[in-house]
Image (tube, rainbow, N blue to C red):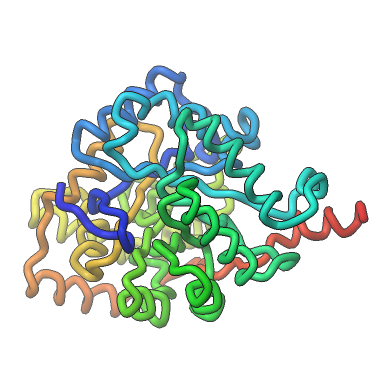
Length: 336
C-alpha cells in the first residue's frame, strides 16, 4: 500500500477505524476475532489504526477499544501510527485543577490501555465550549516537546477553529466526516489543510455502509447501532439515494471492484492529503476496503464520476461541524 503524510507522520493511504469492535454497530465479534482482524489489516499493509478512549461506553466500558487495539498491535507497535482521541469536560475532570493536568490524566490512561509509552496521533475528539482551542493546542505542544505524543489532531471542526489551534501548535490531522454524500469539507477544510501540510482523515468514508450498496430498506440496525440515527439510511432516504448507488455500481462493474472500493478510490484520487479510515467489524469487509488501494481511477474516469455525482441530489445530509460537547459541558455546569 502506498504511503501518505499526516504532517510528519507517514501512514498507509487507507487506515482502519477500530470502533466497531467495541460498540456502534450492534453485536460485536469476540475478542480473538477482532484482534485477528486488526492483525490481518496490518499484514495487508495498513499502518494507521484509529481508536478513542470513549469507544466502548455503551457495550462495554470506556477504554475497551483502546485495550483491544493495544493487544492486537503489540507485536508491531513501532511499525504503525496509533491514533486515539480524548474528551474533556467530563464530570471526573473536575478532580484536576488545570487543563494540562486534566488532559494528562486522559493521556496517561490511554497510554496504559494501549500498552505503549507514547501516542503517535492524539486527537481532541470534540471541541468543548468550556476550554479554548488555543489552550488545548498549547498543552498539545508541551506533550509533543516531552515526547508523550508525536502529533495532534482535531475531530469535527470548522476551518475557523482549526486556524486558531494550528496557529498555536501545528496540527497534524483533521478527522472529519467526509464521503461522496458528505462533501462539506471540500469548501474550506481541504484547501486549508493542503496549504498547511495537514492531513485529512475522513471517518465514515463509505457513509455508514450506504456507499457499499449493501444497506437496503430491509436492513435492521439493532442494539447500539449508530446507523439507526444516520439520516441517509432512513427508508425514505435510502430509496431517494438509489440513483447514487446505481452510479457507483456501474463504475464498480467496469473496474472489477466493489462500490465501496470506488468510493474510497475517489477520495484517494481527489486529495493527496486524504487518508480515509473505513470502519467495520467484519474481516472480509475490512480487507475489501483496504483493497481500494489497488483501484486506480484514470483522469477521465474520475471526471466522469465527479460529473455523475454532481448531478445527484443527496438526501439526508448530516454536516461535518459538531463543535461543542454541550451534554458534557452542561453536566459539569449543573454539578457546579
